[in-house]
Amino acid sequence: VDDLTLSDYVKRSKDRILGSLVDWLTIPSISADPAHAGDVGASAEFCADLLRSAGIQNVETLSAGGVPAVYGDWLGAGSMAPTVLVYGHHDVQPVDPLDEWTSPPFEPVVEGGRLLARGASDDKGQVMMQIEAARGLLGALGHLPVNLKFLIEGEEEVGSPHLDELLDKDRGRLAADVIVVSDSNMLAPDLPTTTISTRGLVAFDVTIRTAKSDLHSGIWGGTVPNAALVAARLAASLHDSDHRVTVPGFYQRVRELTRQEAQSLADTPFDEIEFCRQAGVKELVGEAGRSPYERTGTRPTAEVVGLHSGYGGPGMKTIVPATANLKIAARLVPEQSTEEVEASFCQWLSEQAPSYAEVSVKTVGGVAPLLTPIDHPAVRILCEAMENVWGKKPLFTRSGGSGPEEGLGRILEAPVIFLGVGLPEDNYHAPNERLELEQLWKGITAAGELVLGLRAVKDN
Ligand SMILES: [Zn+2]
Image 1 (cartoon, rainbow, N blue to C red):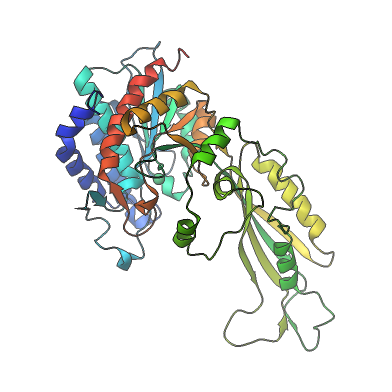
Image 2: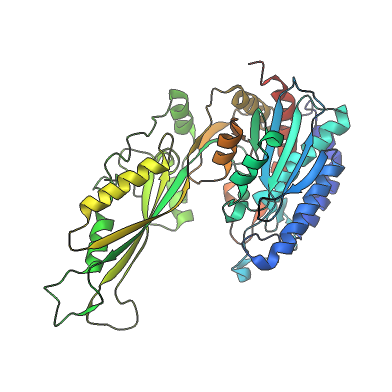
């Protein structure tokens, strides 16, 4: 494809872009580890310099109490033109187990067209893609047809604890007509896909007590309640034999797919044997009558993530356990709300728990699900940009995970679209994270096409 605005720019800039990305990737910006706070700061400064050198203005670091995010904008298109906010992050996941890396995580190497380093695809490479698209367009055209803003977070890998506050505080400066997220993947290099939804998340930490302390099983066993048994019964009754969640009302607000969404999902190839191999499981289980992609992206789940009670040490101990802990995490889909699911779960729990057990629940977290309407003009423009570069219309996928995108859309009141060029085999969050360089080059061209296309987003 040679008639795309940035294809020549990308061809002659590969060495420089790669060199610059490699320099950035040597900074171990691990947000989860306080010992690396200085590195996250250095990574923010590096990102700020990248933005400035690309022609982005008003660059500064923003913080709402945590490690810094980087902001910058180019507002030369005027108030009548649309405004686009690009979101990504510059912090990275921890690197252990270190001995599984084939080369040190912060000494990037290129092997067989892939760049290996922590952060290569999640997310410094994808942020670089967006910054280079802006640099290329500003260099070629001297201006942009839209106002462009960047928000590059430094705490995404620890759950974005200050992002909502930061968005709220700087709502005016961050205001946009469209939010473009580049922190996601497509299913394969020859199978362009775009995410249209992320799931919500709410979790419950359930404590069960049936006696003051553990009791001798010879003296008391057979007459007193057993906390381990209560927890096991609760865990076992969370799903029916069709693997459907039994909490009344759990599925009530789940929105059925539109025809276009269902078609896109049906057209997405799925290799069950490979899926099982990657997960290391013998076979798949899950909600009856739903395909695996439906179950991971479009249906809510409630997983038992922990079940602890009694004696787990070597050998045996003859007790009746007095306490148990049960942890359950629910992934939510549009239009479920964390509050309603919490209320239904607590009601279910109080009905299920026997009268002899003291049961208390602590709700942990609470992220709402996000859904981008696929008939929004920004989605159509994104699909055209991707088709121009990858030669195929992208399919729509729903991410099973939960992320900061929901807060971006909710607080800034704008649709969120996903231009992500990571691949499933990029080893996100795992040893040997990598970035397929061809995806980066195509991504820069596509990001440029997208910015040009979005000039029309308000006219539709
Ligand atoms: Zn990420």
